[in-house]
Length: 259
Image 1 (tube, rainbow, N blue to C red):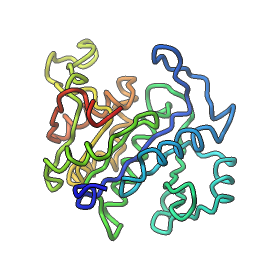
Image 2: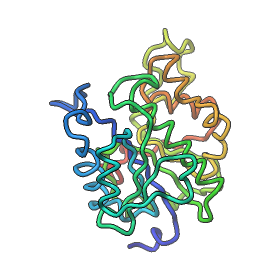
Image 3: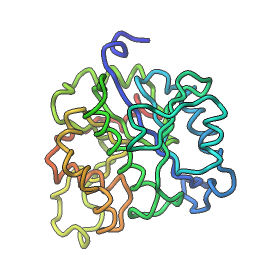
Image 4: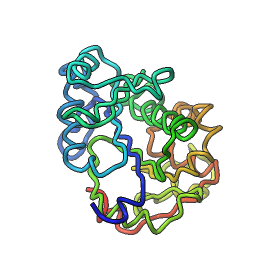
């Protein structure tokens, strides 16, 4: 554990969309949740936590609610989180071999655009949970990271990057090279006005979450996804632009931080 890891508290939310990725990174709409409900919990969430997730102040995996996964969590010794029981179905597995936090969503298990699909719905859910933590928890993380469950981080390099920024400022970090501008001008209208349109993973300071409070409460991300038939990465970039959250583009697409 580095000195920066001891000083900075980072909460990471990993969304499981319950869709497979085929050859050449092509997504499949076939749902693993239907074939094997425990796939994402055991093979993705737990594996990621045991690989690098233990370096974070809190590692939370979001999965579509399913009785088999809930039963597995309970049988493994996970307990309902006291702080969020009234608002979210969350299990704290920190005292078990599993180790992570498990947040069940009401989202579908399909990889589709719009709020009907898991990517937008899960990120919207994670943002709501992060805001709830900021407004109610005794200990508040400095940074919040929202990623897919197949994104792996190099914690030491990540913490060294984050310590260069002030978490009391409303800041988002983006990978330079993934922010080439508007993809379809016929959809968004004004050429070049949205410079940082693709945000994946989404890295926000605690102050940025507060700046997004109204947007989160109104499910603005889901609305953008529905209005333009988008996935969460593009809709997230537009949301930051609309709410005037400062975006810092990092060179090399996070290659030193993100695998």
